[in-house]
Length: 209
Image (tube, rainbow, N blue to C red):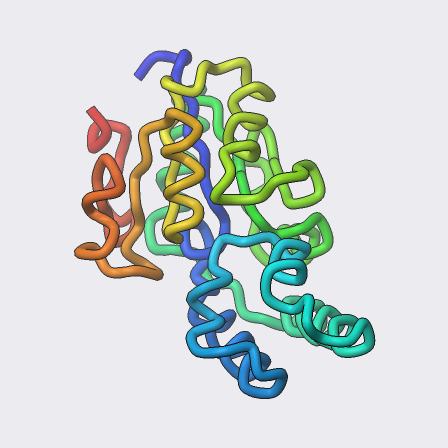
């Protein structure tokens, strides 16, 4: 693949296998604060400020602050196993000089914790976190910003996503989306993406041609 292409990666559920842990945290938080059924599914791919404005606005500021602190404490101690095969694929992209971006709804504080635990930062030519955008996924702002950073037109970018909001964001940016069936079933995402993969095992540049 020529250099005019770029590969853009979401973080949770795409590079690191953390979604199941988030499910437990938000399910418990939802029960404790009466946030409604399946809150853990409804917030996937959404930035923390948007979670606060969309799902927590009825709570007192004291309760919101408590949830934010609990979320921060949880993220600082969560396990961060990598998705199978992703490091090999990132290495292949680097060896072939293909530009890459990490495009995540996580904020910079969470990224600092992630980069301490998982040696992935050197693989990315740009990083777009929640702290760099004003409109989170499913809005395309984050992916369009990454493409701009890399100097690559959106139609020449391939996005790797797992959540419905993330997939919507990549599509809205006019990019090809590869869906990972790590968070949602292949059946539920296959009509929304270019192709579906379970993980990056045996996945190479040739797989994209």
